[in-house]
Image 1 (cartoon, rainbow, N blue to C red):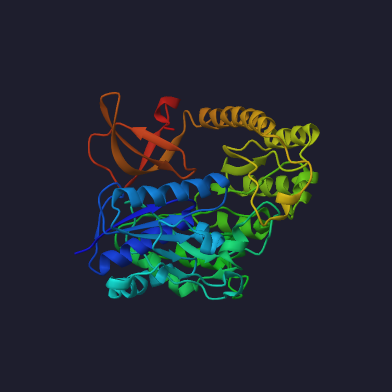
Image 2: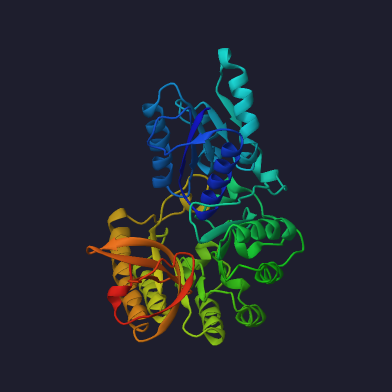
Length: 429
């Protein structure tokens, strides 16, 4: 029996695909072992969203080769889709996006030619692919929550982003396929489903389907008690969308709305398709239909041409919105994107200063949101037991995705329990 080890880099979509490949190999007789152990095959699902992601992808490929010089090293995903034939020499098999489902056949062909193995490249012209890559999961690494990929690709072409070039155009999974997978996960005991995609808000743009209809169909599945949504674009939040979600009792009041900047001039250079005022109106809509929802976002600092005045506008807007969590990223130049050739690139030390300023603001906002939970009773889906300060706690997340620890007399893992938040020490970061 051959041993296979996996390592995932990047987003939740990558994580889903890594688990699906792992399930494929396990179902075909491979023994799945931890990445740090000696294996016959190492599969690294790579990422290229930033220069750091490229570097980490290369590092993990070389680490796999060091762990077993005789192993077959497989590089999958976005980094190799971007680099093509330039991928590191230590790699034996290169599998681009939309070919991960073919992993078994690719490995079989490679091993069949055992005496004359040559590096193998399986890369599609991703820009002209219209087929959604069907992959399925019955179990995930988590025991209570399952991420379900429903969409791939992006048509937005934000000027800083390489993803449309490595993931291709929008491709939506059929509703029937999603429902089959979610039913299977429910039968295996999963209580919470997270619908995710590269650009989730575009679900159905290529098939005339509707994200709202898909959510409604998942909501009807017995056993599923929570539905959480991946990152959304502001444009999808309409009065009808927010009101319809609020009628669905399983929807978690935790919404990640991608922002990137609170300054309109910066948003235009980014090719983001909304103004700060339009974005704010979407936040107000969600707060109209959900009591104190957890709103989270992403912000890029140091985008080309971002002046001190523009940064100040962005900071003031973030302060105004009152996010629960703000994920801050320093702009990373990506070859092949429009922003890479823009004038007035911001020096690294200025990016760092601005990033630290927003991180401090984010910590203040997070603390304020959590303080407001004190004295309330929250539904917590218990996920695991941990030792904390020598005592045994059971931990899980609220509907707003706040992690809570609570001492309990009996094992309540994979159950939803009501927990009174008495102080911030119950909140785990």
